[in-house]
Length: 261
Image 1 (spheres, rainbow, N blue to C red):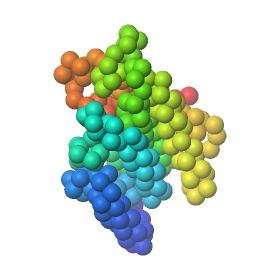
Image 2 (tube, rainbow, N blue to C red):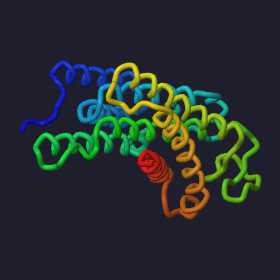
Image 3 (cartoon, one colour):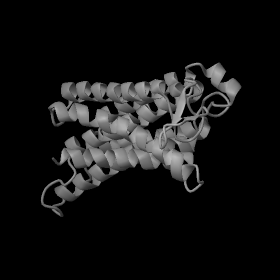
């Protein structure tokens, strides 16, 4: 039984897309060299093992993240709140945000192969479910990035566990601006995904749940990130990137649980 790989033209197209994405992200200083190479690998896994349309969502996430990063960047740099020297992300950032989406692509690929091989009675992780969870994972990452990069500019910051005033940049600190842009980012990601899949992928489950669950789980995952930041990250038991990976995983698992009802 052959592997359920896409046709050669699609593989070539995915490779070309990932090369352009990696080079452009490096030149625009979205990523440093290690981050661009990591983004290429993650993109290839998602495009080949998952769905080529997922790459469009990945591109949307990159563009919106870049915009959030550059928002009042000179001020953030003067305060020491910027990522890297010019806002660029490293391979660890890519791994933290891309591990769950890439894992979803790999699991869907393996599930399809096992089904085609007759080793399972049906596809236990079909592409429609995988697309739904992929959107939720990207929504969490987008919400968290927007909250961190834009929310930091709001001087009225409160610790999420006590709601007492705290300083900017404190782990677990939230603001009204941060909450607003987190929800907008999660909603924007979910709406774009819904429109794209509805237009080009008839296998995606339709209905309000497909739109609203990733939106809500994306916002929820951002809150999880803040709670972890205020507790075990502050205690030094987990790092920032470990927090990102954990919150994306929890937001995605919640989306899976809600989809079962």
